Image 1: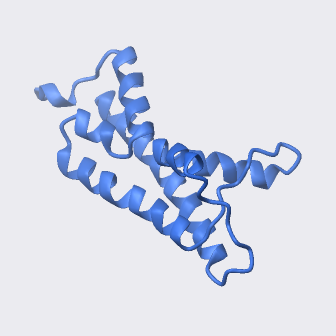
Image 2 (image 1 turned 90 degrees about the vertical axis):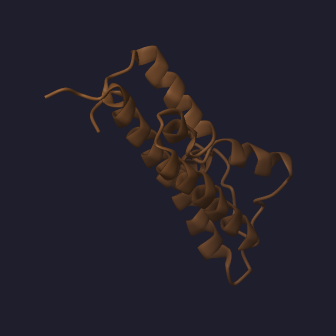
Length: 131
């Protein structure tokens, strides 16, 4: 059985660059790998989900190692890549704990980051010829 050129394993250095692109901009890794349909879906939905979390007044958690759950939430938040840094630079994500949508916003922010981490892992598998 012959494997198509798009499904062959790439050098590890290229794979890491693809993963970095996939983390920085959701969907970029899949676009790089020629999986444009998946890449465009990720490019549209994950930042939109992150933006909804900000709109719902969710909090971008700080890295506080003394509070492990807060640190884990911060790690999840940063999983979305560049949108996280853009939001931080624009002073977004302060969260308003008394807002009725606060917990929903937190959930959207955290899940968007975690989903993007899964997308990065998928891009890694595709780049290595496993998918």
